[in-house]
Length: 128
Image (cartoon, rainbow, N blue to C red; front, top):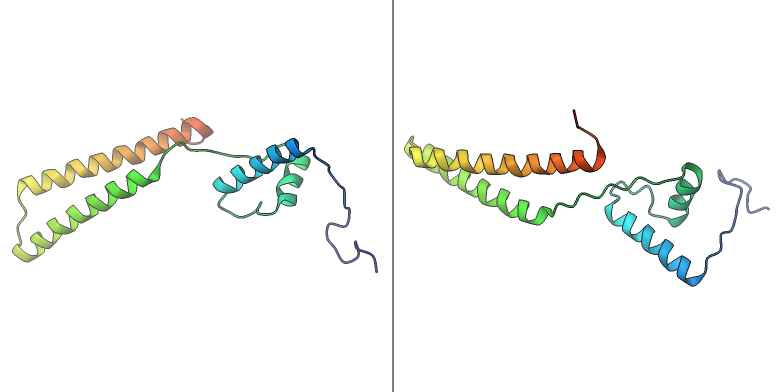
């Protein structure tokens, strides 16, 4: 029985690298997998095939660190929950509490807008 029988991809080709070339290729593949979230290129052969057939693999790197955003969202959510608890318990909310929620909403909106603008600038998607 032949290796190629019953295989969808029955043509096998070999690519050789120097140790330095392989180190560079492996590093590119590793970096790509770090930002690739759909799992299509978890095997080197899938990634290499895409490069050979189509000339490129798209990699979009957004230079935004989500860790501070998570911390800010958590703090804003906590404040909103505290205000909602007071409002539900006492049926009243102060002007200062409403102002605080509005300021935090604007801050959050600014963070999201910055992320969207950065994404549009890097990808050209969403620009008008």
